[in-house]
Image (cartoon, rainbow, N blue to C red):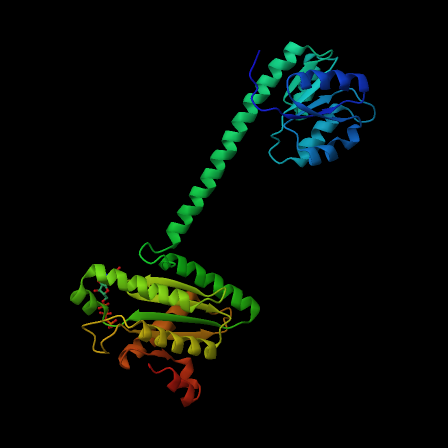
Length: 333
Ligand SMILES: Nc1nc2c(ncn2[C@@H]2O[C@H](COP(=O)(O)OP(=O)(O)OP(=O)(O)O)[C@@H](O)[C@H]2O)c(=O)[nH]1
């Protein structure tokens, strides 16, 4: 009569064995698989295990009736998607109202009419197809939102976090380190004489150089929790939660070595024949007064100091309080 497509798993809850057998046979003739439950108090547990596509629920049962069972099932299934059809020999308007009110979707009169059962299953089939489509669409929507959120927080040229992503990550890092009483180091890194690089080699080569620098920075922070981002233009930032001054200094030395050994030709730099960068470092154990703006300002001032000390080096005001030996380690190689 109707084409039902896939066969469904149907949970039949009925205390009377003969009624269950009749219902099961009718359903099996239509190609569906049946799980029987004779005890209403066990229906919810069976439902959780079986996860049926449809529930056929007898109304008149001892102790707890079908309406009680329906409420139990709806309570364990957020959204209440599984169709519930009541089976009853009573089907006055009041009965049907009670059944729908308890969370049921439809009402079938006993004794079961095979034709009516077939028609109801047809409606259930449409409902389940609709549900599948809705789930598919909401999954697509979730994925699209995720992609959108990723694009909104990342820089198209380098794939690193963009300014917005960095700001958010910095706020989060400040919070985490404040709670943990851990240090946070932040570096602002700026490519030296990048305008001259663009002027000499063109913007396409400039873009390629920025991508290369981004890759070097990404590779240089493999520690989970470390983050690299493009702060804007030819300026990058590294967020290093849990990294003290000494660790930031070691990383800075490594970065200077890495960019030197990449030996990217820069035909118009006063620093040397290869592309280099300068960096400002700030390290703090955040407290209630620490703000992202304050941290970035410190790192930016340190970057300015590195630039004015001849570029191709890192600078940290906090490091000024440390030993001269440590300061020397920050000079470019
Ligand atoms: N190719 C390319 N160039 C960019 C991009 N973003 C910013 N720039 C260029 O980067 C240059 C930055 O120049 P400045 O701010 O003067 O800095 P600088 O020449 O590196 O000088 P110092 O920082 O003092 O060493 C400008 O010429 C910008 O056009 C980009 O996405 N691609």
